[in-house]
Structures are given as structure tokens and as C-alpha cells.
Image 1 (cartoon, rainbow, N blue to C red):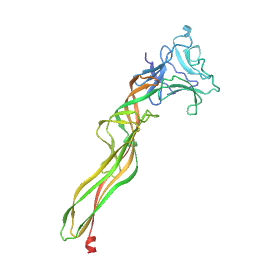
Image 2 (cartoon, rainbow, N blue to C red; image 1 turned 90 degrees about the vertical axis):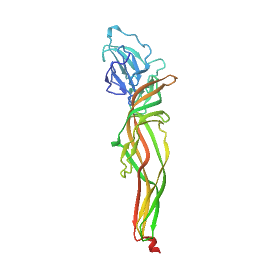
Image 3 (cartoon, rainbow, N blue to C red; image 1 turned 135 degrees about the vertical axis):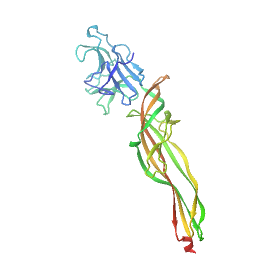
Image 4 (spheres, rainbow, N blue to C red; image 1 turned 120 degrees about the horizontal axis):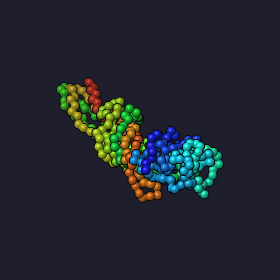
Length: 336
């Protein structure tokens, strides 16, 4: 049975004191990958992915259902820190059906409590205020580990990309001298090496960073600097399929080399220069993800789909350039 969905819960991933979660509402983790809600029969569930794969369901009932209070249900975090599912209407004429208070549950001091659907799928009741150093009181302990992600439909936000640390990576010069009274044909040969690097730093939604070491399979292009673009403008290469590991930098040695014909006028010197300039880019992106997840403490794995976002970070060449500066009369002729 799936959650009776119609409206995202106003509190998002947080159920605070004074808020009620009823069938027809669902909590969503900040990363958009996990959901929690009350089914029509009053059962509390936690699901993963767009397919709503069940990762937790409340076991049994702490109290008997009362036929006199109807078939309406809601969940609430009480002022004593207990998370309870009630049968009945909000807030009167209600009868408790299920709660987390057990013999081992220590009643805390104070009256600031909330429940949070975390970005790993664990549903936790905390003492304190969201954002503070809250103390966990109870949890479903059904949290997920991301094993791998297959990313498709990757959308790079070039308008909000950052380009920084533009610098000269390598250069070479060659002086070609013609002391004669007629022009001569020479050549400028250069061979420059430099290093590029790239990293996919991924998030699930807006807040949860994917741990380094997660296997990634990607169908996408790669952001590149426009060839010979001195303003380091960006484009995206043609789409291809490749594999990466999240958070792991990939470095590659690159070479800019060539031989260019140079016509040297009579009694002249041509100063030939080749340069490679590099810069760093940070390009945010969103994508569709197919996740392979593993439930903590279990060898079972399953796949679900959900959103992915993150940043493509790279150091790359943005300007490969050759210049030819003619000097007359020739320095060599003057020296002679």
C-alpha cells in the first residue's frame, strides 16, 4: 500500500510541536530522495525514491484502535517528546494507536522537540530546536547508504558557473633572425605540457553531500572552455558515457604542440611565442539519478530514482595562443 499523497507537508522534513501529519500529506527529506507519511489505515511508513520503496514501517500498534473514533488518523510530536499516531480528528476526539514510548524510552527534560526525516532516510525524534545541537531520542534506525548512482539528463548551469584563478601554465619563445636582404621561410616549433584535473562533487538535492568513493556512471558532456577564448567562456562537449568516483580528482597530462610556417622579411627578427593559460571552473548541475541503495545492517540492495545535483570542478586550458612580433631593423644586423 502506498502513501496517500496529495500535498507535500508544509514543514518539509521537519515535524515540529503543534504540527500534525495526516493521510494525504507526506514529509520529504531535504534531498528529495526520502518520504514519510501516514497511510489510510493509520500506519506510519518511510519510503525511498520516486517509486516509494518502503524502508520502514511501524511494527504493530502500541494501543488498540478505537472503533468509536472513526478511520481518521494523524501523527504528532507531543510536548513530552513522544511521537504518536492518533486515531480520530485533530486535535479532539482522538485515541492513540502507536507511539515510540517504550520501557527503554527515557523521558527527557524540557519541552522542545521535533521529528526530522534525514537525508539518509532515518526518521529521528530530537530534543532541541532544528539547527541547534539537538539530542536524538528515538530513531527508526533504517538509514540508507548510497552504493552507486547512474546519472542521465545532466543539465549544466553555465550562467551561474564560476571561473577563477586564471594563470599562465606554460610558455616558450623562439627568435627567428633573417640577416639577408631577401625574405626567408622558416618555422616555429613548440611543445608545451600542462596538467588538467576534474572532480564531480555530488549532492542529493540541496543539502546532502554524496560521500567520496561512490561509483558513478554518467551519460553527459563535459563543460569546456571555448577554444582560444580569452574571456574563458564555457561550452559543453558532446554527450558520452563514462565512469567516475564521487569526490575523486582525475588528473591528465596535456600537450599543446605544433609547427607553424613563418615568413621573415629581409633584415628582420620575428619573436615567436606560444602560451597555455589555465583556469578553474565550478559549474553547478542537476541530473536524474538511479540510485543503488543498501539498508544499514543489511546485505540487501535495491534501486530507486531521484534527483541529483552538485558541482563539476575542473582546472583546464582556456587560452592556447601563438603570437609573432616582427622587429626591424634586425637586432642581429645592428650587432654586426
